[in-house]
Image: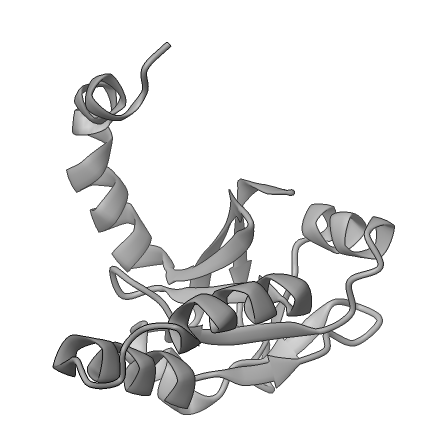
Length: 145
């Protein structure tokens, strides 16, 4: 559902704007509410409400008697915040999430099928530089056509 790479900056009030293409997809699919939380690789994950509920169910089924499950759930869910972008697509990212993702001003917003990821632009550039060279090798191991 969500695809592409977009560059945006926080405004003077600390708001981020959802790229117009992603707003269009959201509007066309009746999506108003999102959940933003700590992601992996120092980015933020942004889920639609429907996808959030799906992920929530998966994680709730993890055994709370296992340390790794407890730790993951604590970090993932304690960071979550509901957000409804305004008519211009702007929304606020809490400071603790910006700190987690090292977001100061410039961001890269990417669509990753069922979620949106929000990256500090420098962190994304480093990730991409370190990961893009192995793209073909990863594809060979993961994809059977």
